[in-house]
Amino acid sequence: MVVVVIVVVAQGRRHDLTTGVRAAHGAHAVRPPRAVTRGALVDRRTGGLVLGAALVRARVRLLLLRDGHGRDRIEHAVLEVRPLLPDDVPAAAAVAEAALPDPLADDDAPWRLDWLRRRIGHLRATDPGGAWVAAGEDGEVVGVALALVRDRIWGLSLMAVHPALHARGIGTRLLRAALGHWDPDEVKGGIILSSTDPRAMRMYARAGFDLRPTVSLGGIVDRTAIPSGLRARPTDDVEAMAALGRPVRGGAYGPDDLAMLLSRPRAGAFAIEGRGFAVHVDGRPVVLCADTGGVGADILWSCLAAGRPGVTINVDYLTAGQDWAVRACLEAGLQITPDGPVFTRGELGPLRAWIPSGSLL
Ligand SMILES: CC(C)(COP(=O)(O)OP(=O)(O)OC[C@H]1O[C@@H](n2cnc3c(N)ncnc32)[C@H](O)[C@@H]1OP(=O)(O)O)[C@@H](O)C(=O)NCCC(=O)NCCS
Image 1 (cartoon, rainbow, N blue to C red):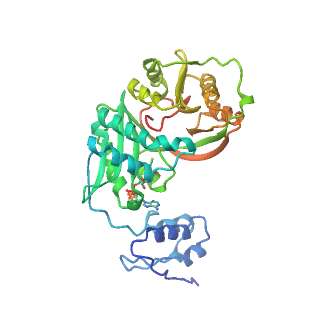
Image 2 (cartoon, helix red, strand yellow):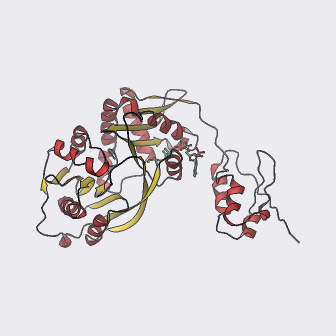
Image 3 (cartoon, rainbow, N blue to C red):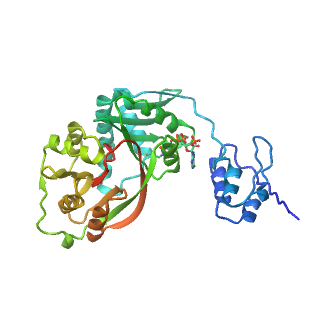
């Protein structure tokens, strides 16, 4: 005899997206079918009952949530997605500051808004086709996306929606606009560094990008661990550094973009001629490319050594293949944690030895 148990879950607030997310957890794929059945939902839109008992294992979750995604939708906001104009830069920076996670280093904070403004202003000027805002009915900027193309590589430099307006489809519209900057005749590959926000990861994966898990290392450098005899030397040769991106990423960085990174307070750069380079901000490598892990590690140690003693350093977005960096950071006393994934699409270089840049990819 087959017993079918149906439990009607009380309706949450009309526009409470978390109701659906909790339902997703309730219908976790690895739970026994019986527990899932108990969590079966009545589909309010169609009035159709979901009969969980008829389902088994992972398929239970898929059916209950229709492709795992049966959340109530918050109504789409009435707004316009339009090119970012010079006058929008301060408002776009304010949205990005509100939406993006706080930097871990305390003393980054005072510089943050200024840095966001400069970064947005710079990329709007170099890549107007990749710079977009979402504006409400009153014209107020509520979202921003910035994409750049350098040497046939497209990169998403910034994506943020004001926290009060998340999950209304704004990010998806902004991403679509920023992808319009990807001319298939000109661009061969693309890179996105994702936050751990489920909305961001979902958006990028559904836009056809492949996910590469990453780790991040952070903490205060044990200065007694810094090796002697490092070969990397300080440099400000942005042309030479930019070119070293090509064998690693499949496309070079822009020299002017690297100059912008170097203009940050407490920024500096190290290179081993013809082999690799890094830009750091107070010891934190914000981009690194090298032809081998050994060269990468030498340059990374040089960055770590250049930070002020006692300052917190983060080394972010280490993908598979950056074990040279993981080992160096662990030896330096930093702690390892999972981080947001890197998403890639199309034709790129080997992506090693590489610490990507949050703003230049
Ligand atoms: C990430 C961000 C830009 C997305 O913008 P958004 O307007 O909130 O997202 P959308 O409404 O377009 O939703 C994107 C997808 O996530 C889904 N989604 C919405 N809420 C979700 C939730 N709580 N959990 C999982 N997925 C969710 C949407 O349904 C949509 O998927 P679909 O197109 O398959 O239906 C925005 O949430 C944000 O600014 N987050 C904080 C900053 C950040 O992390 N930026 C990204 C840096 S890489």
